[in-house]
Every structure is written in structure tokens, then in C-alpha cells.
Amino acid sequence: MKYFCTLLTVFVLSSCSENFLDINPKGELFPQAFYSNEVELDIAATGLYARMERAYVYGWSLSYATGGRDKTSNFDNFEEVDVFATEGDNGEMSSYWDQSWTAINAANEIIYRYEDANASEEKKREVAGQAHFIRAYNYFMLVRMYNQLPLYTNSTEVSIDIELSGPEAIYSLIVDDLKTAEEFLPDNWDSDPKRAGVAWTSGAAKSLLAYVYLCMAGYPLNDASKYTLAAEKAKEVIDNEAKYGYGLMENIADLYSSELNWQNQACEEVVLAFFNDNNYGCVLCSVPAEYGGWEVFQADINFFESFPEGPRKDAIFISEFPFEDGVKHYTEISAGHPFYRQYWDGKIDWERPWDGMNWKNSRPQVAITHANNLLVYAEAQAMSGSPDASTYDAINRVRNRAGLPDLPEGLSKEAFRDSVVQERAWEFCGGYFCTDPWYDLVRLERVEESVGERHPDENQLVKTPTKEEYFAPYPVNDVNKNPNLHK
Image 1 (cartoon, rainbow, N blue to C red):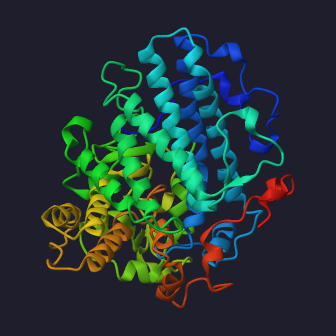
Image 2: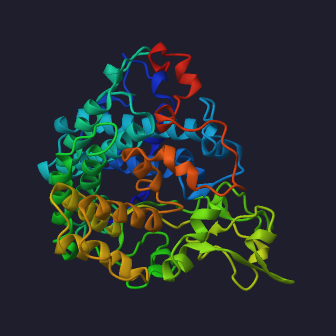
């Protein structure tokens, strides 16, 4: 129920265009007759999971979050984001853009065709629910990266000069899709062994919707009324933890352990993640060169040094590196930075880490955890009224598990919000695609001030960020085809 997984190999993958502007507006992604029965609907839905596996290769979706406080990089495509000089030919961003549209195209086709299939209403609803969910997820990620997007719900609406829609229209579709998904998807898939434990559920749709509402309350929409909706939806999930199978792990290290998070499984804290089938999932992206790593991203020095001591810091970071001739501090290795180790377990021999590891990975790459539900509720409830016992309880569950004391009582709602946002930065640093701390900086309009918290040894800024740097440039290949993508 809790995360994405490739259920079987399907031919429909090769039918999706790698570039949404290359779709023939008069053609079809799949033969219309293909969506004719339950088996074919299942095959089409399975294709969505495989598409999402492809979208999370090499940390593509993390690339535009490198400008935040928690990460830095010496890898070209990530470094240009880190110094606020992102170009339209950035390969990481372009790859994620292409794969996201491929997933949207596949979801659109299912939504456009499923009602005419010779299938039970139950089957049609569960397949459509999965398509609505993944269309919403991809549009949500893209709108936060680009702000204005081509918006279409079937391939016949696509043209080489498709116009851009603003965030209001895009968020409206996202919300509608997630409302449909929470209605159509089951609470669990226990009656379907093929999907039990791996497929999207109503609880995942509700969790994502709560977070969507929270983001809508911030920049660029700044619709404060959405705080109430975010709090209500998050509370609906929190009040039904047993129903959806969600909870916090008592030991935060278990959240990252291969014993509990590997192949077709994830611990109860994981609400949404992406399965890699041992083909993708670049563990080496946050591994030092001395261990054979690619050093795509490292921990920001000041962020690490100011991070509260305790089990959370121990589970997430590595700053002392074992070698045959002894242990080296991060200042003694070539990168000169701590690294994020939370996804290394199961891939490295801790007795001989210098022997390196295979970059392929069967670990689910986590996008949303139940801790996000708790922190969304805490912030949204406080901002829609004032901090109360329930908001303190929500944030303190996360803090206590991290080894921190209860948050001081009597805070104003703004001070309470800032405490929650700081907690989110500590909890979701390093590798959470959907809830990366970068997006909190954008929605609260704090990107400009965040650069002042960098260590002087970090990459030197090419430009001081303004709101122009809040959103990514469109990939140059599509800009050259569609004049509407020129900024």
C-alpha cells in the first residue's frame, strides 16, 4: 500500500514519448482498443509504476533542490543549481522533465479511456484512482519547480505551441485528481497479493493532498485559507493511523535500515516511495570518492554542524570515515564535507567501506513519510488558528523520536510555524524528493535569506537569488520548439 513498485514488465512503456512536445496531437499514445477489458486496464496501470521508477534515476528530481540549506555539490548539473546559475541545458532537470511528462501522458490515456472498458466498476475505479494519483503527483512536483506549465488532460490537447497555465489552474487539477484518488483507491490491497504493500492507497492520496494544501497556503498562491484544509486532511490520516498502517518508527535508524526497507517492502512510516528493482536508485550519489562514490551531493557544512546531536543525526549523516589506515574526519577527505548516509545500509560493508558498493539499488526511495503528516498538521492547525495541545503533540512526536525535548509551550503561531519548518528541515534533509526542505524555503519566500547561512567554504554564488531563481528554466530543447516556454 505504501510505495511505488514495478509489478510486471509491460510493452506500453515504449509507447510513451520521451518528450511531451513530440506527441502528435492528432495521434494516440496507445491504440484506443487497448483499454478494452480488466487485464488491459491492469497492464496500463502497471505501466505507471514502471514510469515512476524511471523518473527517479540518479536523483534527477533532487537536482533543483540543491539550492537549499542542506545540500551542496561539485557535480556540474547540481553545482549550477547550488550557485543559482541553472541553465536550460541542465541534464538532470531535463531528464526529470521528460520522464514526468511521460508519466503524465500515460495517466492521461488511462483517465481518458477507462470508462469505456468492459470491466467491473470496482476495477475501473481502482485503475483510474492510480492514474489520477500519479498525474497529481507529477504535476505537483513540476509546478513547484517551474510555476507555469502546459496543462492538458489528454493527448489531443497537446500542440507544439501549447500555452502555459498558471499555478492556480495547475493546483486546481492536482486537488481534483487527489480527491478522486482518495475516493477511488482502497485503504489497502490485502485482497490483491500482487499489489499488497506496494500500490497507491487512499491514505497516500490523503497524505499528499494535505501537503498540497499546505504548499498552496504559501508562495506563489499565498492562499491562507488552505491552512484549514491542510490541517483537516492531515488530521484525517493521523486519526486513522491504524486503518492506513502508518506510524513513526521508534528508532529512526530503522527508517533507513535495509532490514525494513528493501525490495518489495517498506516500514510503516513510509507513506510514499519509489521502488528501483535493483536497476536504478543511485546510492553512490552521496558517497565520497574515496569509497568509489560520485559525490553528486554532500551535506552543507553549516547545516551539518548546527544539526542537533542525537539519534537522527547519527542515522542521517557520516562525518568520520573508516579506512584501512584509520578514521578520517570529513575535513581530511577530498570533498571536505560530511555525507548523507541514510540510504547506504545494505549496500556497503561497514567492516571495509573503502571497498565501495554497487550503485544499483533495490531500496525504495522515500518521498513522503508519516512524519510529514504530523508536521503538516502541526503547522497548518497552528496557522489556521493558534498552537494548541494537538499541534504540540504532533511536533513533539517527531522531536522526541529524534532525541529532542518537547517544544517550549506558549509560542506565537508564527514562532510555532518557524519551529515546525526547522523541524522539517532536520527531518527531511538529504533525500526526500517530495518534501525536500527547499520547497519550504520557496513557499515561505526565504530563499534569499537562506544563502546567508552557508559556510564560506561552500560553492561561491554566481548570483544572489531573487524570486526569479525560485523556479527552474525550461529545458532548452522544448524552449526551441515552443515559443511560449521563453521566460
